[in-house]
Every structure is written in C-alpha cells, then in structure tokens.
Amino acid sequence: MKRMPRTDKSNASRNGQFRYIDFHTHILPNIDDGSKSLDESLKMLDMSFKSQVYCSVLTPHFYPTHDSISAFLYKRNQAFDKLKSSMTQNYPLLRVGAEVQYFNGISQTDELEKLKIVGTELILIEMPFTRWTDEMLTEIFAVNERPGFHVVLAHIERYLSFMPDGALDLLRSRGLIIQSNASFFTNFFTRRRALELLKSGYIMLIGSDCHNITTRPPGLQDCYKRIRSALGDEETLRFIQAGLKLLLHGSTSPDPSIRVREAIL
Image (cartoon, rainbow, N blue to C red):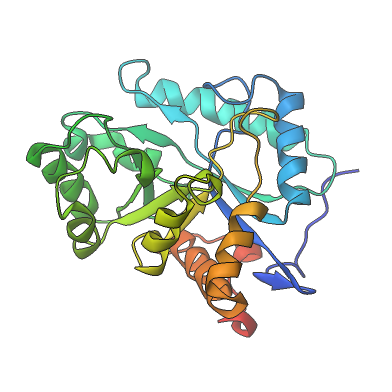
C-alpha cells in the first residue's frame, strides 16, 4: 500500500504533540557519507516520523571538487526517485536540496540555483572549517543578494571558533539564516551556549544532520525537550512555525500539503 497523504497533519502542534521540520539530513541512499542503502534510508525516515518529524529536508553533500552540478543532480534525483518509489507507509513529507560546500567563486556560479531546496529560495551552504576571511564573507553575502536566493548557513556551532568578532551580528544584519544541529542543544558542554544563541535570535532553523541509524540517527525530540523547558510551549511553537515559514519563503510552487494553516499562524 502506498504512503497515504496526511492532509490533516499540517499543524506544528497536533493532539498536544509538537511536530518538527528537520532542515538538514543525509537520508538519501548511496550518494554521500550518509545512508548506505535504501533499507537504511527507509529506517531513518521511520525513526524521523516516530520522533514527530513532520517534514525532512534531504540535503546530500555537494562537493564542487568531486562533481559538476549536473552530475550531482543526476545522482541525487535518481536516489530521490528510488526512495520515493519505495515508501510504502507513513513517513515524513520530503523536500530535496543539497548541502553545498563553500568554494571560491560560488557567488558567480551560473547553475547555483539548481542546488536550492526545490521550490524555495533557500540554499544550504557549509562554510570552511578555517578562519573566515573578508573574501569568504563577501562571497556569501553576494550569494544572498542574488535574486531568488536566501542563504542558510549549515551547523553554525561548528564555525564559532573560526568566525571573526561580531560575525554573528553581521550575518544576521545581512539577512542570512542560521541553522544549528540538534546535538548542539543536547551536548552537555554546548547546550547552554545553544540556548543563548536561540534566545538571542541567531539560530533560526534546526536539523538533525543525521547520517545513519546508529551513531548519527535522526530525531529532534531531545533537542526540543530542552528548548521547551527553556522557552515554554508557546515560544517553542512560535519558533517551529517561523521555521516552517522560512521553508516556504519565496516558494515558487509550494507543496500545499505543507502550507501553514491559518489556525497556527
């Protein structure tokens, strides 16, 4: 039996249970260092669904030194089609995109728009794990200023030691979206800093950055448990709803099944 549509489940909170958007995953099979098989991908989706993930954004790595954009898209779309055709039960809704590794000249790349999350203006970019330079920031700002683009910086917590002073405020003032991994909120040594950045409005999106079902599994419940404890249910729901709006920001052909209903706005 094919996966049934869930037209009654577009709420961020339903029957007292919060429902989440996982903005960063490596669930697609056999395309990067994430899932190594179709079976593992289906198990990851099942784990996501059971942990109240409403929509998973599939963001396999794009490395410009490994593939051309066209070659990457061919492999990604094949993996996506294979996954969709094998979904025979209730799983999260899916959006497909990429985690794009920063490279010199990224802002001038003609086909960059093909790496955006499909149907949106959002492009997820992984910055270098070296000291950020003015040239890097200039490139990223230039991408964000291209018509139809809105940059999301992946797992911001991994760059904090590489960022110049005042960089977080600069990123926010220039309109970039900051994504954090759920582990930032659950790790004993970093969870206080994660909540500080969230409360201050720097972190806007959260993803599991899941790669498998063992060492880096999907799931956001523990992360949001800590957020709910710190912010309360009402503010947490507002944060989730704001993330859903960002996913739909600038959407050219939004999937009606994940439109925000007036009841939760």
